[in-house]
View 1 (cartoon, rainbow, N blue to C red):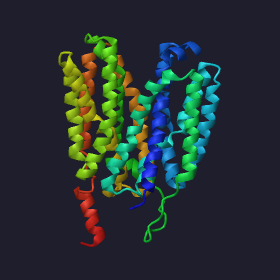
View 2 (tube, rainbow, N blue to C red):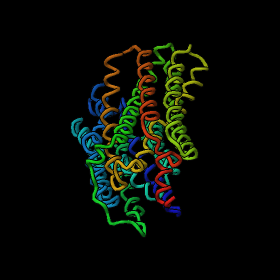
View 3 (cartoon, helix red, strand yellow):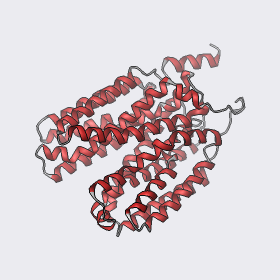
Length: 405
């Protein structure tokens, strides 16, 4: 494994990129009144353009991950980040909603490597024991981006200025990639480059379980975030107090995701922590809404978000470790990351939409549904998925075989 500080540079670059991705996703919501007035948007159109960032992953993530497996981690992202910059600059001058929507879709499509490449990029430099912490820090970028968008979005002099800022972020990401990111070195005794096998990834039972966990975890997170303010207003809270609840939730999700990554790295196992994260988080979230409104509400929502934060990042950290099962090789990690992101894009878009149409303003029903989803994730990812951590049976058997013991 790489011992130099270079691997931390990679984590910084990827976290920066994911931060800008999160910033882009919610900038329209952060400047809702201004955006709706300038582009003559309806509420439905605002919701559509705010969620369009999920669609590129559904359409292109598997293909892009497989392409990166074949062509490497350097050239393809540079080209795509350059195209994202062009789309970002063009979006600043969008004359109407249709063009704005199209350029937003294209920008998110070209910036897609930041969402899928982390496991493949980190794998040569981080050990299995370090991977959880690395992915935990990286995953915090999304929460940081959304938090900054809501905090800084209204402070821009205009929506054009906010969009220009995002375009500049795309350009900075391209420059960072050109300067710092390189193809990983080959081990001295490594065999010749193996041919990627997309079929093996698609046939991997473990990958399907991890992928479903990833998609359902993101879907549940989006559902709870989208209802956080209105649900607590429905319980009698003032709008300002309900907004504080949402802020506490997102801040604790940000911190908890990082902490969860370090914990699984320290423990060396994923499954037991994952059950605690998902099932424990489900119970705490349910109680936070079920209990009478008061000081306990703020405390419980913060603890619940802190605990459940690892449901996304910890799960993603396992993608680079799936080769220990023998279901596919390390050369296919990019395609596996793409497959995971496809589920995130699809389920993250569909699950909240279906829940909203079923439950409407039945906020207790929404909270209960999200809790049930988290329990299902905990069972699927923590009980039915094989342990992939370095202290698990599979990794220990592989290590023994490698040393001839």
